[in-house]
Image (cartoon, rainbow, N blue to C red; front, side, top):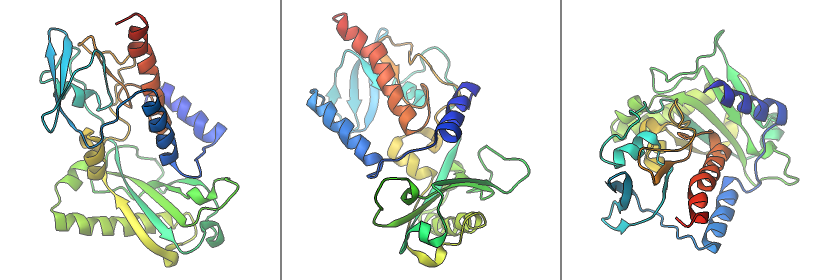
Length: 285
């Protein structure tokens, strides 16, 4: 993370504090989708992009996984820089930069009580048990030395969430997870949940006797649902701040373009659309 982004994140977390809608991120996505459709946008779900067909220095067609073809004057890709360039079939200048490496395992425990009633009254706890905090891709499946504990129940909504939830996030190795067989993968998920939970309860009250359900995702889950190489959560280390590619009507947005996190990704899409797409529309392009 470069220093400018570090300053933004530090201010957001430690000076301004974090917030969460009562209904979660899905509420934000619901409103965005409704507005998009109201303005005439067409949303095609489960329609992966196979490749981009270019002619000269422009993209002419978007070919979907099922063979259907879409044509557009301007294209904004949130697939990631490396992934978008791969869809072009060749690497346009500037030279390809390496994809991100940082990925995570995250486990959500559903409780039969509110976390606050169990003594877990914080919204977020960052923990590290080592003299020096290690922020890099671990050698093993997961690094249990540090992590983030979050309980969405403890945000000040003015009302109570119906279920008690505690989420634990820890650094993980995509390559190690990808190499597992299906049986090994299922066993590793269960073992990893137990390991990161055991590590986390050194820093918060032990909630394990109250767990009634568990859901865990890994770096390969992130890869499956986002398409990002290595299950990279924060995108490539080198950002393309202007969103420009060598193809004049193809632009990138998302974590490979700029800011990280959910809000950062949304701001990236808005700023790149305003800068490149809407400006061209106003000029009659």
